[in-house]
Length: 343
Ligand code: SER
View: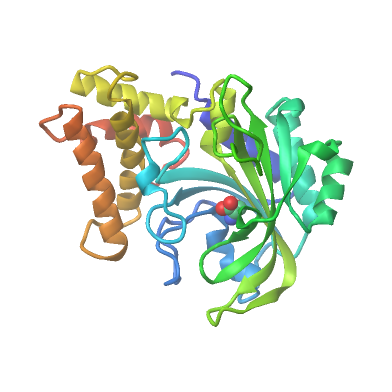
């Protein structure tokens, strides 16, 4: 069997946080339980929302997950960008560690830095971070723990460094870790006009949860300060694959090449965009169906229907007359079945 780097990263992440006394919690369903404010699970913290707000007592003080997530419809919606960029997805996986009133900024920064630079082995000189512009504590900790220079700790005053789960719910300032893929790519550091380029890529967001947004528009302090972190598995895997293109990792190349071969087209030629759409949408469609969402005319089902129709349109564009998507499912199971045996 071909080496699966993405599987190895999941395991490294889980083993590391197990060693740091975190309970490894299985990924929750893509359909959030008892939460009408959210269409889909869009990050790792969703299943723990009530622990952050204090509405429920957490059964453990710290946890870690590899969370399947969908960002299509609702506040975090990436659907229309998918296919045209190197790193937008409707479905992705988020590696996250969480503290429910247990550790706060210092340990969160320490764990992220140690995991990335020692366990995963990223080159420190390629990393820089952002902090919320008023967060002097985070700046000091990055210097102390990671030995980063002043210019590698970038203050950001916008909502990019203030995370909100949705219109209501837990939120707080955050600190993001970026990887520099090198000057062969266009793009600038966070906070510069070129920040949306493909050179500096955010790979981990550490959220220092200390507030909750209420339905009446007010923001209150939560009873305990907590940590919610999220690292895009596909982005970290892309680095270890030697690329800044998430679609260059084995999970995607297998689907892209499979679809191209069925359609009889070049995998990385003129139909590149459509093949990316197909690979991405196959993942969201399969995982949403497995979690019980069915295509329909409203709500979640309508978003799924839009995703499926978009995938089918792109299958048509690459010349497929017959249904394509179901033929790719065995390949998806081969690359992701080990991590998601129940999906
Ligand atoms: N919730 C934060 C995010 O989605 C960190 O996990 O970026």
